[in-house]
Image 1 (tube, one colour):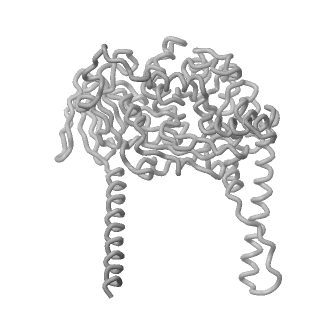
Image 2 (image 1 turned 30 degrees about the vertical axis):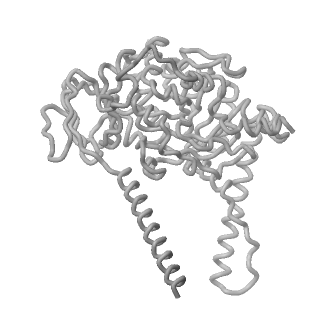
Image 3 (image 1 turned 120 degrees about the horizontal axis):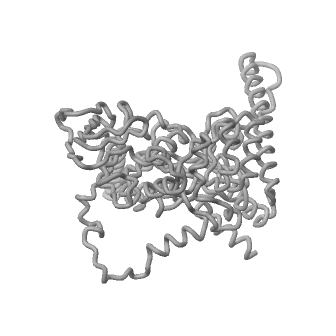
Length: 475
């Protein structure tokens, strides 16, 4: 009897602990979605889509920009910040990031459209905080480039310390990663002995899977119609089942325009190839990531309505990336291509403002055009430009206060807000090394330097895939 009572007590205790855990998780999720209210006074507001506004206030209420003007009154309960002499701009968006991804490549098949980065989000990665310190508020967490058609991406708000679900950009369009060139050919053709082994094989993988997906869709719909008729009649011979195929479902969603494609690419010939394939299948909304040779085919990109997301001046880290130019972004912009500057790096993401500034040095872009490449342009490419990417009434309260003009090498991000909630404040960060720098202290193992170098020597889009390739080569 005593042991039975102890069992009952044990069960009750487990229930209590489980309930408490659920309450904690729920509370964390609720906090992650919390919206803030703040009045930013007297700053120079860089709206991106309109004129710069001197000595102007911005009122954010419950996470939304409600008023932009002069002498605005602070509502009860809102924070007030004096931005006199400072610049306020929309939060930076990074259209190509692996910042807080746990797993990047599902590399065992050239097409893995059914997998998603949703399960691979680490909301506690320290790099999120570093990105916030650089004025970044939204990232596109992408699958890697080991596959011709990889997994689906996740557009995230950098709500540092929240849950996986709390970081998701609510109702952002679905995205998926494609990859051309060396990465899929060496992982599959050279590594596993399966198609594609060549660049022309990459094209045929895409065409073949799209054709198979369309056949599946037709057969699946015919089966479902026949099954519904059989169920209604209640007699006759039941139809032969056509099982659901998640991979083909995603491919059909791409063809139907429900998913935005972001394609890892370098060479101009491959960029032209994919545009031809997409035209054949009626796919219209897509972005070429990296696109180091995109400047060669800028008119063709503009004609097809294709977007590009490039590095400012990063190339020659492998053979197919040797032909590039720092004028790439300017040439694309001059031809009317919606272009963004991305990081693809945990280091570059901390100073995307400087990366954008390089387009002024190489191409003489206007300051506004340069800033568009890290704000409204990537927002367009991710399908969220109706909510972020510029400072306008009705948009999300994702803003950054800079000490000076954000394109200046001397300017720093002082405060970063996401949905009106302050996630970074340089003045309140007592643990930040930059507050008390001792030049006589050496890094124990040059950890930061090694991380930067390794990121440049190795394609960060190929994380996890190197393990597979090493295993294959050993056997």
